[in-house]
Length: 133
Image (cartoon, rainbow, N blue to C red):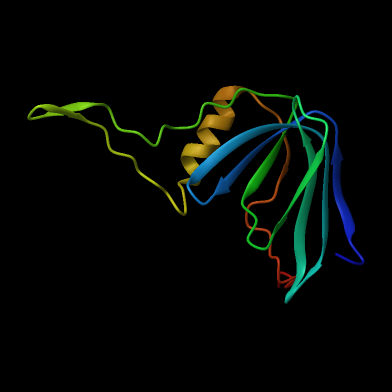
């Protein structure tokens, strides 16, 4: 990513993100979020970080960013994707709900319940770089 602009540099942080199987939480340190060109995206976001307890830097490029950076290492209790167990004949069954889009209200409620401070909310970031009118 050439000509990247740093949007955020933070020490200890928690990232709540939407992945392919719903929302997840990861504790990080040395977080750096930058914006720059990637393929046809003029404002793609690159997040570089070190996971809690690890030593090597990782990075991911978001072209459809859906994540929030929280201050400090926060225990965020996300809604479970699994239903309560139920008996069906001779078996106990649990079903999973895989949300590809997720319900932002559930995530916002989980963040609020944790008492966390939002450092930066990147949900809705326009990776194409279109300016709001």
